Image (tube, rainbow, N blue to C red; front, side, top):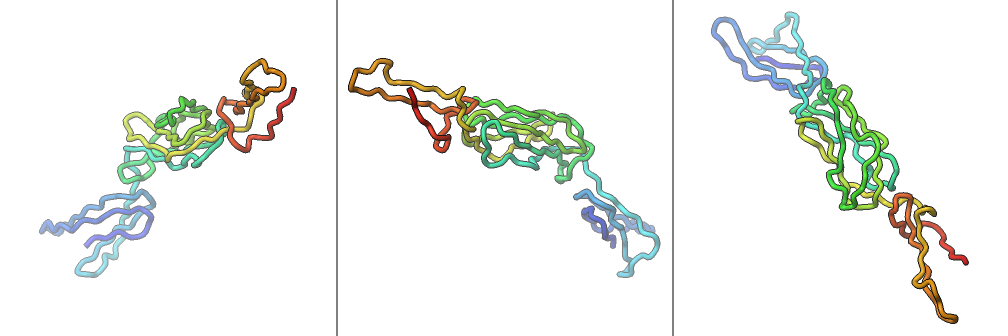
Length: 212
């Protein structure tokens, strides 16, 4: 009976085949990549004591992508965030031999027509791609990003929201309901508060005072 012990690699050992000529075979099927496992065997329950071989599981070729660093659940428009992507083999080992381009695009732009800025494409190193300085310019709920690379199965981030930045005096607009007001009557003054990306800024944007 064969067995495998030690190391961080994992795998399975099949049943033993007796060829009837003094040769006995089994297969070790690797699963999780790691350090070497020692292969041993017993004969009638007694362990073989000669020098034992080792087997090390290494990653296979990449088959799919996975998001390893997610965007925050909520970010301010224009603020930078990072998305991490790994290329994995069929057993979810990081495919350390993978070094192709990985790109990010919107899966959903939450119907806003937003732009995605920053490092949206990068070459993976040892199966890992880190896309930094990413930002979204429009306010919305339920944005997602999709990581893609060639024929690999794509990966989608968790949904995230974008909130408005601070009020911009160069983007905010003052209006009146009428340019002419009769003495003793009133017109309504309105400030449409916007951030630097043209998003409306809600409560908490600052103290507003009209002047003349």
